[in-house]
Length: 368
Image (cartoon, rainbow, N blue to C red; front, top):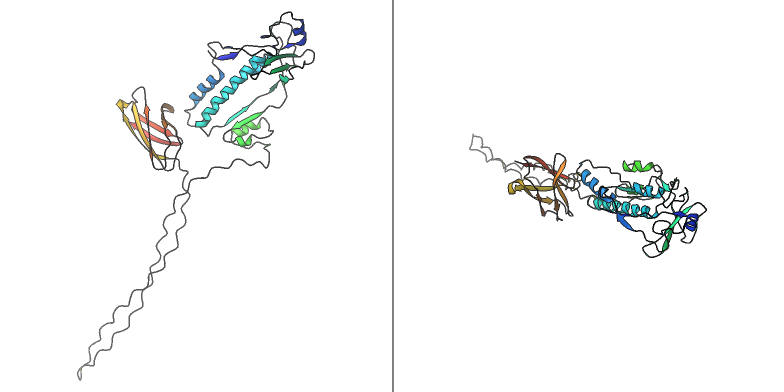
């Protein structure tokens, strides 16, 4: 069973003054009344528990997911003018947001948006103030020992021991908070319908101007460009001078031809060619080299991953048919240094193809 808070109903001044023995723990409270914890029915899980289960079921989808979590009982307890019930359901909703934030810490590409679909009639007033005739109020003691009074003024709560009627919604503006990608587009006062645009990666129609978003991270250095081509060959050397004329022959006969001149020296080497253009920027360093070995009768998969850049700790998943069959923690790894991890399955892995997922890296793995 999980915790919820016992009801404490707001009542009118006429009821509190005319009732002979109102129970301050149920009817109207007092400056020393504290909200009391009780248990939800065994068949009713808490909102944070349902949020955690929903994320576990959706996490394996390779295309990501959209999950809407509603603290609907906050509205229900406000309709009933139940101060402690309303506060307790707000605490449960806050715990559910905490579950989402825990998931975001290991999945930083997650956007979380928190808002309300309407305002309600409950208002905090001075602890000694009595609202207008017909309006209901109740008083409780805060964690620091100070009294706080909450007023409801859109419906008569009646004269019974528990409240009657139903408090109404109001048209006041409601807050909206966001964390994660696109959160910079949730600023100032925006239309409620603009939240849909933000969820689809678009800019709201009334985004405040002159508000800079956070700076993006620097990309990794691109790979070195290819070496420049060789320079052109130097020009051939000039021809050497001719040999000396041959001696005259004996009388009456011609002299023999002179020998050929020696070959000219080689010309100087040509100048080096210009450097080649720089290569295109390298990809964002995400992938690493992965090796795995199946042991222990197919129940254990031992792996090693070596990254091109230093990486922080993360999670590895072994996926088959779109479903995660095992998970393992991958320790922080320095550039070029292997990080070892292992999957342990309850049963021997079936033969076939699996996909090893580490961050955005996906590697095929075959179990024979």
